[in-house]
Image (cartoon, rainbow, N blue to C red; front, side):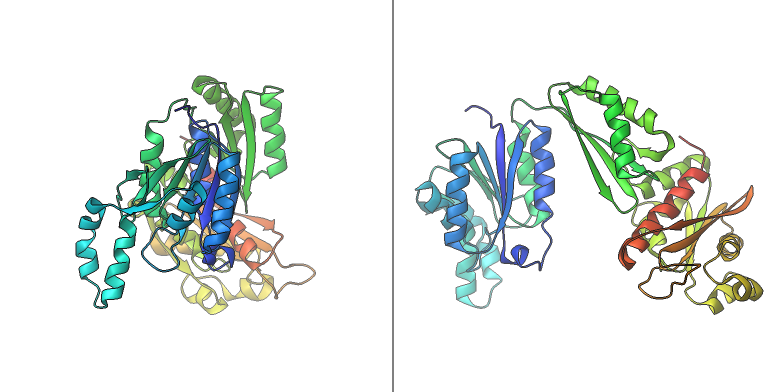
Length: 408
């Protein structure tokens, strides 16, 4: 069979269409397909409705080499993907005895015999399909030929979908290089795009995409014929052009980079937070092994706790306010003293929606950095809602820690 060159992704679930759950499968599948040279041309979410799904699969089957479908393969009444795919392809469905046998123990756990019987729906296979045995969970994947290419049916839960997708893609021919991802902080999306375009010039064998999250931008390079070596060289050239703003070229998060730098330098770290409410500490402790360098943090949301826990002089709070250069410095120095850390960062700001003033509007955030060489503070003014201000504050605090540590 000729390897597919284009694809559509169909995610199935009424909860996705109604906004009750977030679809993360599409982005993960699209990245995986792109890495093996398959271009995703369309992505759509459809409800658990057999007629609607059948119509989408019929249309996509005529338009694309590959359709990747996730969701609707479970045992319940609204898991209609098998039936919709069979109808769209004009094939029957047969219960696989081997799969059914493997579901016996699962069915036996149900007290209601009707629920037990429903379990065996996961053994129903489209005629002519190749079965991808479940690695996690109980629903297998299926690969079915179409007039133009293939339909790949995968379970919806990401942890169940992921290994079956990799099984399907493992032996695909025509694979291209993995995308090069440069993760950056402290520069705008537009500035980074311009810098990357300056390096790439008018070459058409590398595709550039810039993805922005609050305070954190990813410059992504896709192989469109350049090859792995040329793609890597282009990534390195862009990283050099961007300079210190590029904190990762190997997929590591900003928190991971901070912890790796701290370990390499044998530097311990601590945090003092007000408006971020522990989110900086949370980002660091999300990384396994953080305890080797991260000593802890203090969430001092009130002025009283800033004084009693961190030793901030009440006169500073009275004179300058909690959101100020002086208090940010005092918080960073205080948590460094309390924990004995080598390096500490503090965050104090106005996340909104209320609390701002003409001098200190919503989005004003002060950061303190305390280390062996002294204490300093920096101020930022962020736009957006409360969530965005807090997210940007976390990224900035981590980036200030990174820049205060010796480079790799």
